[in-house]
Image (cartoon, rainbow, N blue to C red; front, side, top):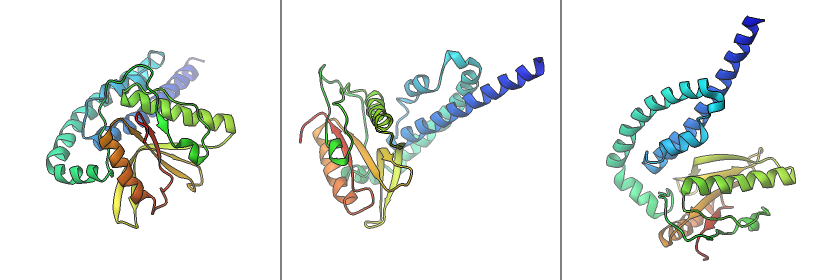
Length: 220
């Protein structure tokens, strides 16, 4: 009986470690896309560390520390080498740079989400990008449960726009299993990001990612 319990415990640890590594991969993609490691640990402890799975969490933490020190020079090199390229991409809305911002209590997102068949309630805007993105995603997932639809998602998803030979990065991409419906989702906190969205929306309109969705603290 003892060896069986050990095997079961080992399988549970491996499974939890696999889930953690999947989440860590998403966090790393988010940091690289934003050229910043400032939110790495806050996102890690929120989504990857659990005292209920302490052994796999400890193993995951050791791996994350190693990955964090590998990630720092990558971000610094990208900032130095690709500064002009990234600046140009940001001006056209191909890449968005997000920073947490202070918002008055009771701020809500305006959105065009209902234009694309998603019947969702208004979402409170906190100004914390990671928290707001999680709230938006949860609303999509709740909609899927309520309607029985299958919804999948990707963070910081590269979208190749063949019509313009450009690559855009969607902060959040909502899709169905068949990949017939692809909805890039953008959070907009200021006028610059609204202008970025308007520019990238024109590029997306000519592609398979034309059904772009925004959640904005300003009505436009």
